[in-house]
Image 1 (cartoon, one colour):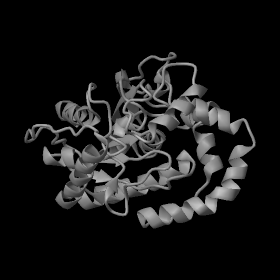
Image 2 (tube, one colour):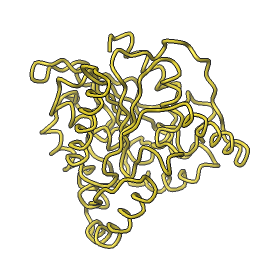
Image 3 (cartoon, helix red, strand yellow):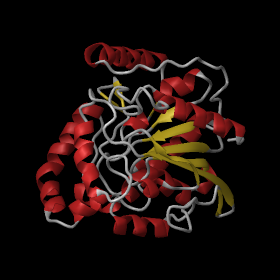
Image 4 (cartoon, helix red, strand yellow):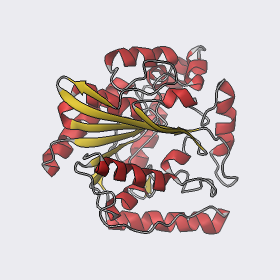
Length: 317
C-alpha cells in the first residue's frame, strides 16, 4: 500500500510523454480544478488479476490516476494484494490495508475503487466491515463471471499452469513489486468463472442487480451501515494500434457472446448505480493502460475517474 507523491507523478508523466514520442499515443491533459476531487473520505484504488501498485516503483497500475486525483484535493491510497489468488484471499488482505489506512488518516471510512477482480475484492471488504466503507465502485468489475475464465476452468489448463507457472509468477511479481505473495492461478480463475462469481455473490450480495443486466441498489444498508455502490465498464476491444495488449484482448474477446471489453461482458460489470456500461474503452484502457495508450476520440479514463471523485464529493462521500 502506498500514498501518491509528486515525484511519482513526474515519473508517470515522463513515461506517458515517452509513449507519445515513440508510438504516437495520446497524452491527456486536464485543467486542474482545486477541490474538484476533495472527497470527505480517502479514495482507495484496488488492482485486478495480475495487478500491482507499481512496477519497480515507477510504472503504476492506475497509470497517472492517483496523481490526477490528488492534484485536485483527493487523498489517494493505492493497494497491493496477492496478484494471483482467490478473491476471498485478496479481499482479506485488502481489508487489512484498509484498516491501516483508517489508522493512518484518522478517517472514519474510505471510498473503495476496484478494477476487474478488484471489484470483487472491494465488495469483500464492504461485506466484512461495512462500518469502514462509505462507497464501493467497480470499474470493469467481474460480478457475474468472465467468459475466458469459464473457458479456462472447463479444461485441464488451470491445474497444469498453476503447477508450472505458480513459482515462476511468484518470483516475477516479487522482483517487480518488491512484495512476496503466494500465487494460486487455479483459485484466481475459479473466482472469475460464472459459478465462482455466483458463490462469491452469495457471500457479498450488496449492490447486485435483482434482474439480469439491471441496476443494483444505489445504497445498501449492511449490518446497519449505509454503503453506496457504483459501477461502469467498456465495450471496445482494439482501441489503439500502438498498444501491445490490444491484440491479446482481440483473441480473449472471442470467448464472449455479448458486447465486452476484451475480457468482461457488459452486463457482468453492473453493480449499484451504473454510470455507464458502454464506454469505448477496453479492459486495460479503463485504468489508463498501457502507458496511457487509449483511444483519442473517447472520454479518457482519467477524466472518468476525476468526474467520479467529484460525484463522490457531491454525494457527501
